[in-house]
Amino acid sequence: MNLLSRFPFALRLERKVRWLIFAGVFAVALAFAAYTQHAWEDYYITYRVSKNLATGHGLVYTVGERVQAFTSPLNVLIPAALSLLTGNRSDELVLWLFRLVSCALLAGAAVLLFDTARKNFSSRMPAVLLVGMFGLDGKIVDFSINGQEVAFMMFFLALALHALTVRSGWTVWKLGLAGAGLMWTRPDGFIYLGAVGLGFLLFNAGRPIGQSRLGLLKILLGAGVLTVVLYLPWFLWAWHYYGSPIPHTIIAKRLLRNATSGPTRSLLLNLLTSPIGTLRPFAGNTFLPAYYGLGGWPWAVTLYGRGLACVCVFYWCLPFARPQARAVSFAFMLGHLYLSLAVRNPFPWYVPSCAILGIFVLAHIAQHGLDLAFSLKDKDDRNFHRLLTGIHVLAAMVLSATLFLMLCSAYQLRIQQREIEEGLRKQIGLWLRQHAAAPTDTVFLEPLGYIGYFSQLKMLDFPGLSAPEVVAAEKRLRSTSLAKIILELRPDWLVLRPGEEDRIQQAAPLVLTELYSAVKTFDVSDRISAYHWLPGRGYLAYDEKYSVFKRNPSQAADQSRH
Image 1 (cartoon, rainbow, N blue to C red):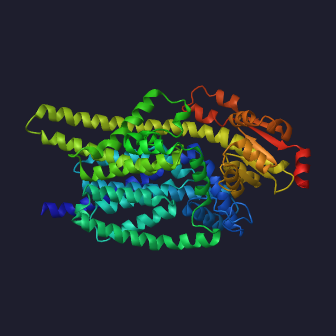
Image 2: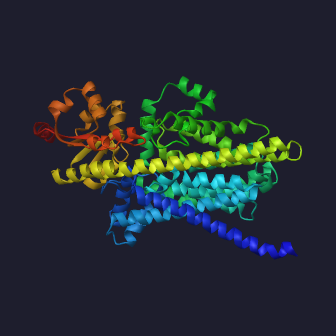
Image 3: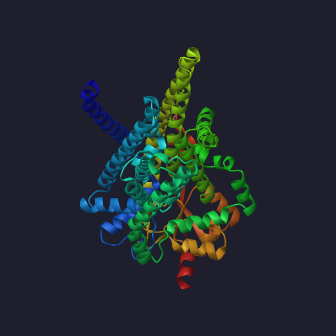
């Protein structure tokens, strides 16, 4: 009778906890956005395409050129719809509305993770660790509010984990929706879902869902069919509209990867030494701030982040470990192996897709430790209390470190947005727009986002995300040398960092003296140096100075005659 009378209260309490988690994660993400005002460089690459669609020019970066200069369909279509709904009046309003959508998705993902923990953990602390680390992870939060598509990845990955760990009559539908959502978010989304599914099959972690490996395999195949059906319309439309279903961004990056990758022997060695090989370059970055490798973070931060990543990579090797955690740990390793082999540099926006898996594993490890502690109760009471206290202290330390790194990252990104994005790169774009001879003027540069959007000129970016001309030149030259590409394409303008200038000078000294002349320098190094305490200073220092070069009139005349 008492149990029945308490049951409605328990349901109401659970519902309140869900809403509190949703509101808490939503508020943290929104506060992060309000404090930092951070809008990622790549957002403005995609948003230029979104704005062209909203204003009737098609889903293109440069009007009249059908090039898929974006990777995520959702990340381009939703801002386009928001711009259209607001009458194309305010880019800032569109960004904030997109941030609200992303904050809601991130909060929804946290609720799904909580429900997963509630159904699979016997203690509260692992659930707190799971939701807390997820909601306070600096890269997950930042790349959810800065215009990237990470919030969508987090929601659909959380939905996949929920489908595979919580019994339901809708498992196939949930898993299929998660798969389709991941594909609509990023074309490599199937990699992460496939890695998780393979882990659950390998370690028989889906027994409560599919009763057996064969039963789980049937569920995964059914979900795969649903994924294909839901993603196929975009695949076919993109193929028809662009002439290829593969985004041009992937083609450009793949060429760069192939041109700069090591020999086949090194690739095979990396595979044979997996999972050790996966710790470099991506896995070690999982719980570290974005671009920490550029300097400015204490060595203890690196030790902490790589230590956690190492635990997540190797946990699946323990035969006595929890099956669900072994499955996801294996997926964590495969995800990082994929990133290590497919992408040369550890770009931070890729990492959250593995970070959510790592956080899931760490929460299970906490539950594993608690189970071990409670097995000692009444047998070895003294060690029981010691182990129990130690696990809670470690969990509190990890949560505190996660919060600390997020706060430091927020301060860093607030300054980065103010000084680099708004104070430098946006100003370069506006200056070029004012001084260009015509809208068809061509600009060669690497940071395409802000400068490309605010100049609205024809961009010849490296490695060619929006410019098939650059990719074609790299193929003809069989080289990614900046100097050779510039000599091949002869753009009207160059926008270069000091390091890029040095490489061009070494390869072809006459390019920046006879063919081009320096006409403007944008430098905020003094302002960056004025900040006495700045975590991750190297990230800002990398972009603190740019020089603008204009092609000399004689060279322009010679090219026009040819």
